[in-house]
Length: 372
Image (cartoon, rainbow, N blue to C red):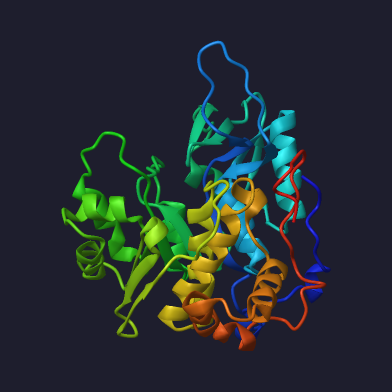
């Protein structure tokens, strides 16, 4: 991956500039999780059969796993810190160096001798993604490695990730220091969907599962019913619903919103959920209306799926400026284009005047369709 096109850190567009105070938190967002080296292939009509070699139209390599979320947040202007283990091999060095280039703070991360960096090969074919992963358990408990995390406005965490430290977890420490806790959850491969996991929402400000996860955990039959069930447990409930968009309920403001997805050609969905979560977090910290938060998140994730994989595809403000300028320049286009222009007119008061000098997405190491 080439170094992303950015301005200097001090002059980078800052969507939270009005909130900055001398004694405020050092970071907007703190994250913890496993970093993978992702190798992504796209443009295959079908997965190869036994003994068959196929050629892919596109390829990219980039940090994956929690790095998808870290890069997505940093490109949107959130001052982001990540606590993660890195192998001391070339894979780990590549991921560490790339995250630093993306402006992600790694002061609580650790290089671990003799630990093999996790690697995932992702193949986009037949409208879905197929993955092969090799990795080992992290050599140290996250809370033991991180200690007390730096002060941040928000934390994003996975409800299903256990922390076996004998002392209070890093999440508890962040919560005590005033961070808003935004939670997600992964797909339950066991199929049990233990509702006990939702007890962790007691300290969370927001919960952002997809529709399948939300319905399974709440034992409901529609995304809307799942949303209402979750809204009784957490101040901000957000349910993503794939090609149908997203819906949310914010009990702190009394707002309810339902935003459709954008019409795009999806090349690779890897990391789209991370981009969505980063965008919702930014909008919440900035105090935007619920509708604008969902619309912005839907836009960011739609820009991401049109490119190759994960952190590589996460849009920056330059990409958002370019999209909005192009959208406004389209004449006609019928009801859909008119709806887009109305839905995103709030961007006129939000975006920098020019895309030059703000962050654009990076380019793949070897790619055909991912170059921005």
